[in-house]
Amino acid sequence: MPKRPMQDAHDLARNERHWNQIAAQYDVTDEITNLEAGFWGIMAAPVLEAFKRHTERVNRENSFFARTQFNRQASEIRDRVAASLGIKPAEVVFSRNATEALQALIGQYNRLEAGETVMYADLDYPSMRQAMDGLAGRRRADVARLVIPEPAVSVGQIVAAYEEALDAHPKTRLLLLTHANNQTGLIHPVCEITSMARARGVDVVVDAAHSWGHVPLDIPEFGADYVGLNLHKWIGAPIGVGAMVIRERGLSAIDRPHGDPGSLDSISSRLHPGTMNFATILTVNDALDFQELIGWDNKYARIRYLRDLWAEQARGIDGVDVLTPNHATLTGAITSFRITGRTSYEDNRALNRTLLEDYGIFTVVRTGVSGGHCIRVTPTLYNAPPDLAKLVSALTELAA
Ligand SMILES: Cc1ncc(COP(=O)(O)O)c(C=O)c1O
Image 1 (tube, rainbow, N blue to C red):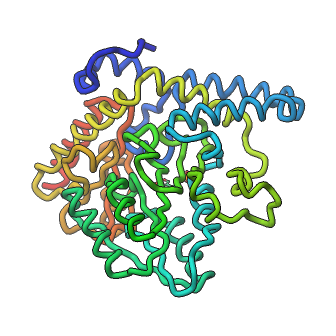
Image 2 (cartoon, protein in one colour):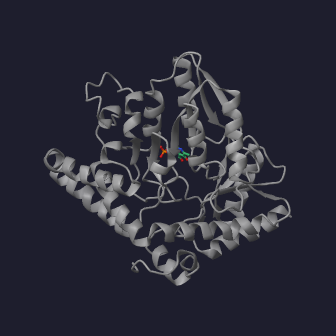
Image 3 (cartoon, rainbow, N blue to C red):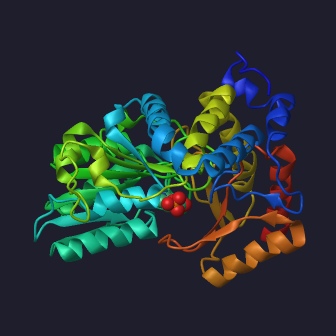
């Protein structure tokens, strides 16, 4: 691994020699061009090696390790996570994934009264929308659904969509807000929306499953009391680790689950994952080491550069609609597109197959966007400009 360079992140993003050395740390199949890094993040070689070591140790030492060593080590890693996120250790707890964290936050939210409203958008993640529906059903509350404008063009336009929805539903008590959505890749202006919502007495749950290690993330700046995160996507920890954040002032609004007798003042009484993969939690340290060596700003600049390489060229192709804007903060590495007018699932599934079978490019179809189905493209650190050039030339042929 090269040392973290002092070069400006923007210039460094274009330094292929540097990024080739980092890409070489990822053992990826060469059977396809993988442009689908949105599901989870491949572990880099040093992280994978550490995971193997931790797994062997846990397996060898069994409950002796779990009962005498693990809690101390896990709490040190939790402290490191909290420090990196800019929050207190008492405000974060590990979960198995973002879903577990967000379902707990939503399902155990206790401030919602009958006749009040919960709100979410079409681009929010399906399981979280369902959790909001379930909460509303149990508490005899209403559900308000808003549609994020397409094309999304500006912070003001997205904030205005939420403002209009909140105006139309003044009894809203809880808002689900996704930071980086998995459908189009739009990065939602969380700070602006949260401050507007909180001024109206609305609590906000932020789905940041795709945020940490992907785009700049500042949880205190979010202003929200509740956040669910993943570490197995863009932090590159082994599969099976996420985190639940409850800011101190919001703890009392989240019930303890399943008759838990734990302290009302402790976040750990709010989540019960049961036995977790000890080695996975230990490897969070190694994954963070690797991310910090690359540098958060450097990584963001690089993956954003790779995204721009294909998306801003594709935007110029007649017949291709790119669904995130060319904007400094509303876009990260994830961006979806569709061929103009081809909004059905069948059309997009066929295009996804053609990209794979005729061009060797792996992408994924996304459903649930009000404007129609689409194809999501997610490059990451093991990709290089030729991968994106290949996609652009495929799209040029296919759109014609
Ligand atoms: C926006 C968003 N929220 C939540 C999740 C759920 O993440 P996990 O399956 O790791 O719990 C995902 C997964 O892709 C997601 O994209």
